[in-house]
Length: 201
Image (cartoon, rainbow, N blue to C red):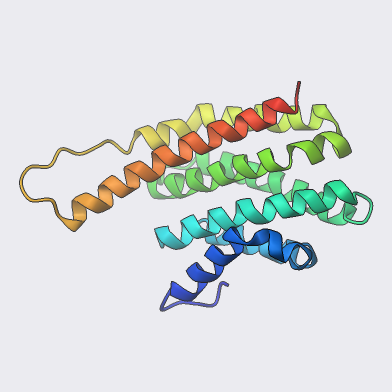
């Protein structure tokens, strides 16, 4: 997925198919889980917004399939589970590092990636409780809440709606799309936190 430089049409289409029909590729996803997971994470920070959105959607879809596979056969996929958990912690540490920097662009890109991570942890909640226990999921929950409280919501709030006068242009549409995208992400990770809380009861 990563080698494409001049056009994003092919990778976007591939990611859309994967996100829409992931259940049809269950065995293939489990066989290539590490590379798919890693590539989607990289693409979630891509400069092209559409590609980034498709990568986020694909990440959610493959996470559902990977979580199912691990839940059904935990011993067979023990190494994969450990890889996913290590990746989660590395990403959380990365967010903390970015949080201490002043680059606003980097912070916004990181915020979008963090939303996807929260959603992904939500999909793995049941597996985490079964294999590592509720204390592990609770630790994830508190760490993610800490990051959100400190930075992510504030980052989305920074995308203020600008007031335009006169003709509606492509520039206006682009700004509105960014705002709607941010709101969509907020609604989505609220649902994901609810999924995590559900497995903490």
